[in-house]
Length: 90
Image (cartoon, rainbow, N blue to C red; front, side, top):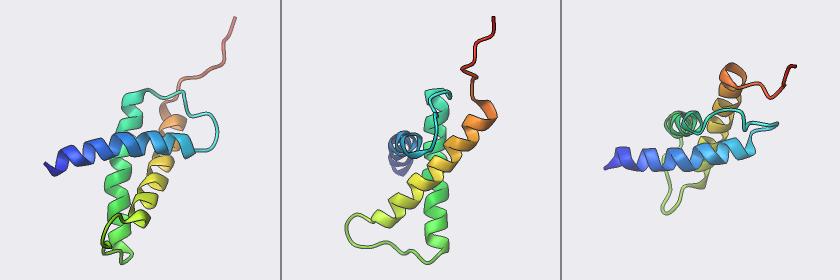
């Protein structure tokens, strides 16, 4: 059941990461955005616990902010590596 939660959180975090990433990041497909979100959740939670985060009662906002930041970085990397060019040539 936890894997479904990670996938759902990954979709949301991926879209939020795409939203907060600087510049125009609409040139990557949605499936890559979702993968960046899932990666952001997993890597963000790992980074959070590596720096001493142990959770808190209720919603742990710091862990989610770290996950969004990691997803934004992954979206920027994916956009730079695989992004489609918007320039048209004649």
